[in-house]
Length: 427
Image (cartoon, rainbow, N blue to C red):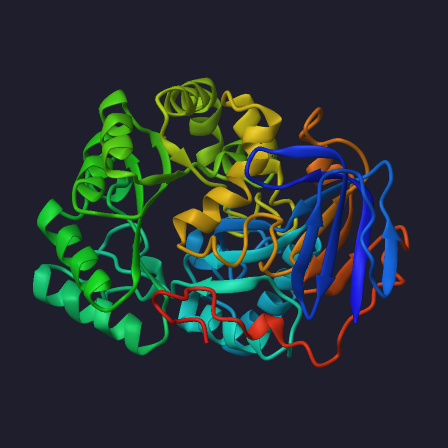
């Protein structure tokens, strides 16, 4: 069975858009794309006149295992559900994952989770047992004793090259696709966000072992020394980078490193933090303009940037509000179209899965979102006017009843497609 979406403002995901485009999907994949206004023959037709059709979005910094339904006062032990029974934390994660998918996030990287819940979530989604984004799992990550992230397993840090290699192998054995050094810098060491924790030799060992075992390296890094340590050691993505420098930007451009800004977290801590008694709120209020100025510099200098929302990273950053991040990218100097690409093609490229997702092109998975309006003129519409979500050809959200006639081959198992094809870790 096949379905054609016709008459849409077609936004490909790579910077191109067309006033009247049509897309045919069959067996969970995109079978044909027309950009000349001509019709496509299919078993069923969905008229999207006046609405935009985009690729499903990909969020590279999500914490669906994190919490947004309990007051933690900024305490990450509570935010990341460490105090909850494992069963409760898992059920809450399933609910958060469904909200995330409903927000148009058809693929995501869970970048920090207790007890490898994200690995189980990934497998359940692939089997069609739950509604969730297609997942890349990072487990709890690698952290130093007493450092940022030690709440995952208090007193059990990885210090020195041998211990770090052991932790990386432990994560691989537990099914992680990404190896994240939970903090390359942070206030626990010297009281400043830009004070390094791991040495360059330590992060280099973590990333080398990750790559040797076919996993991708990522790193929480906020300021100059920590960012340089991980970038020059071969990290794939720098998470946050709120205090980056021009030197950092030049190094990332040279190395092809991706920056995952998580600026929506800055905004939500500012807006909601005082009422939630979060200790970070005052610091964010002082740093807000400078943080956005630094990321504007990164955009201007040509740093690769991909969307990461940090939803669930604390009680202020709510699950399902992921696409606030695109509004922040526009504030940091991107055009609305550039921001859309940062949430579609760029994260797919960063994760080496652009052959499967990230753009609306023939042969790729049929991950699509419908926007009631033109997000290339007003980026806020990606969040406020999203009315339809299709994942692997299956309807996951249909606010206006537009997709009720969607014909789906019940035998399609597109969600079981291996995303990390080169690594083969999502089967």
